[in-house]
Length: 259
Image 1 (tube, one colour):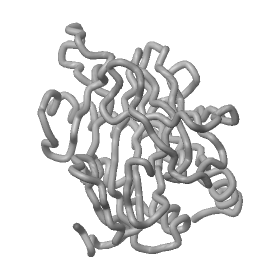
Image 2 (image 1 turned 60 degrees about the vertical axis):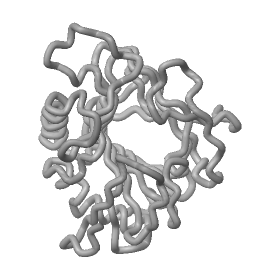
Image 3 (image 1 turned 60 degrees about the horizontal axis):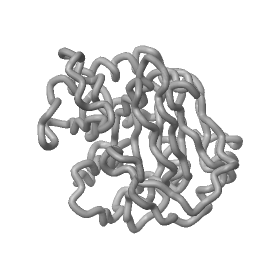
């Protein structure tokens, strides 16, 4: 259920945090499974099974990782049909939050990604998720689960409170040489009112698809890991051209309406 304070934060700030939302056993199971997927599917040109593994562009070229290919991974997409990850997004607690915020009872998870943010990985520039989603219904909801601690040193998120009330701004390609595929940035808005979002494993950040957000570089010695789900009203028309990552799956019911 959505509490009065959470609803107010959602409407005024565009996000809220539920501390200690997921048990340690859940985050540990996610980590084990995504490492397994990353090692099995490293280097494959397209989605194999339920995982699409993308490398971190500015970490490539190292030959000292051995079998630990996950140390070079940026993100793994298309995980929400895997039982470990589906059980979480299909849980009653997640579904109730989504239904409460969207005001509907038919919800789809259309995108999922595990973010590694390995040591030395760059942050992601300021952007709005809705830039990537040319859909006919708005908003969408992002559930960002901290699998490891997220802090200022290892590249936590930064958000601009209230920016969910903005239209979708122009996004230009990430101007850094060798930036990750698909990274874009907003350059026409003042971000000086932003706040950092430090989180502990199991904390859940819930935010609006138009909320402006970014992350900083990982300057620590360990990865900053997170599992992320994007949810929308079922029946939404997806106008995304040639996407390999969107995969619409009903949650919270018996699977009726699967695409």
